[in-house]
Image 1 (tube, rainbow, N blue to C red):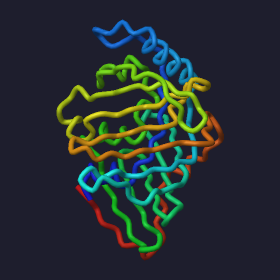
Image 2 (image 1 turned 30 degrees about the horizontal axis):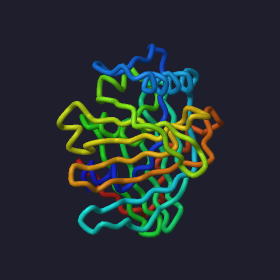
Image 3 (image 1 turned 90 degrees about the vertical axis):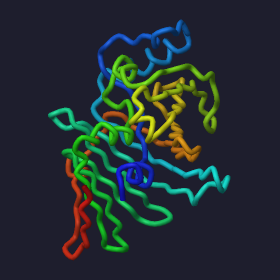
Image 4 (image 1 turned 60 degrees about the vertical axis):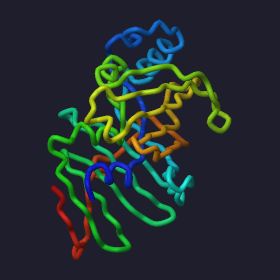
Length: 236
């Protein structure tokens, strides 16, 4: 399983922005709406410590023009003392799968098969941040990586959202996802839906409910706990 497949196969994205840098519109843009969304993201993230939510996700295959079977479960995100990302995504249905990322190592564990894939992210550590894009980053930090634009408003369920479009500036990053769309809840400043689009038109659509910010999350939640007898495949 390569990194790109890992990101798409096991990703559940908790999407927030935090930091203290003053938000500003991308160069060449004077959109008041865009600046308002960036300000909302920054305000929401000023005291950010961690994020948790329930999620549903489904993959769309452009060639087949259809979605695969939706998955649902729980997503957790926090930052370690050294600033590195710690993530846990546990798919509960239709089958069980657990992704953890800590210390630059990603582990995907499939309990039913008693199998795990372990990848040292190394120089690709920045691309793994797509699993929780913008978390712990100020809008100014996002601007360094993406061209951003305002996409109007739309409801996700009954929640009114502002749409934020992101396009990677770096060609190597664009080879993973050509564009990323965030639906930011107007009421909370929390992105509650995301669409990650690949260059071939395939995309992953992720939605969040029961979002919590700065709740109690045990550091042990991000540990890859592999029972004795688990078949481990090391990648990279």
